[in-house]
Length: 158
Length: 439
Image (tube, rainbow over all chains, first blue to last red):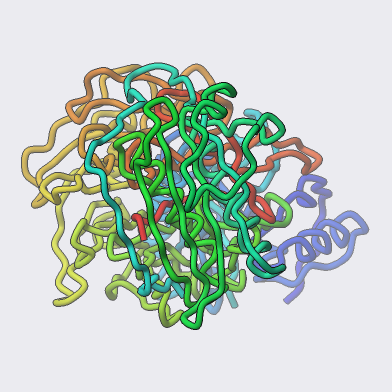
């Protein structure tokens, strides 16, 4: 099944992920901007049509209202593609110690993971991992970067 | 890799301790020492002598407690190993101590003879002779002699014959390649060695008191877990079989256990502190709280553990008994605390604190009193003690920019009085330094 992306998301180009996500995000953005096709049930599909990430407040692992809305959409999407497995990554900004941020990243990843589980997603389909402050999305030592880096990212792992 | 220098013939006399340097709060005036040429009769021994002299001079100068009197001022240029110095000549150029040495070849190896003189009292205060079986041990011998001089004059334990394990970093800040690396305390490039290949991210290495093991965290197959690296064999071994992330490891003072954090998936991935016995492989949980508990560090007597917890709302420092009882908050100031490390002397705790937009590295008494800041900057982390408890090493990171520039991270050394900060050179960026015990 193919879904045609009907809207242009420039911000997708910034969607960098652990598993060679640069290329994926670039192609997703390119195909959507040119009105091309995105394969359903893929990372590109998740990014463009659902949203692959949620953001956290400083030093918090609680899901905001916006985050919960995104995760409701992710859960619906995961229901639609039951063969899809995911890894949830938890990340922190750089304003904390490495060890504290590893702990915080794990709590954030787990918040996303358990929300999806409560929404009915089989935990056998999901893994989670903390990257602490080791893998920023946006490089920079200011709040603009930090707010993008305090995130939980859902990655399609198969 | 870390060999013991077995064939050290060592004779030392004159028990009259010359405590010339007062170790107190505040700035210490460096003690002037003259170091003659370290004489060698042929080109090999002359080269060894030059290397040794440079190592000794650099070590003593870098300690901040000594400075080497400029060689151009020396009036007497003889080998003073077998000859009484003309003390008046050395007094004239204000050298308080005088070191002279020579190197020769014997059938057992390289022979080093050294004499240390107290110029003002016109007497020899230390002499030694040792045989170096292998040229590769020259650097360690230089550090060992430095320790002897430092100890004889200051009355404190030395710290020069030690190593630093750290994380070598390279690459874009969002795709950093991190490798374990090890080097002598002075960061000399000849002593530098990578321990891992950079395929997996590694973080937070720490030495075992037994000097042979390093515990650290590694993302193997994207699973972040605590490992032990054996310096003798190069083998790596996972610490325990945990169903979630383990991190923030440190050895107990007897090297028989590792204390670390574990984020249990059956406990909402909340980090608690666990003790893992390396012999029995049994684990015990020390904390039980809905906040994050991490960064544990044992007191040198093994009875207490200081750790970082946000159980009160924001990250603060706490001390507990080794079994997890009697948890007490010790940090009292404003700000976000982290990275507590118990000093090897047992009397102080080093920490980081984030307040007013800056990181601070400081020390406090073990009950949290007398907090004082040693260094402040945008990003400071990972304080680690010298084995004699007088110095800290840590890393300092510059601000980064949206275009990917900046973010350079370097390892620094500082006296806990706040004086004498300097960079410890590393071939790439460096972070998470940890100091070995005296070898």
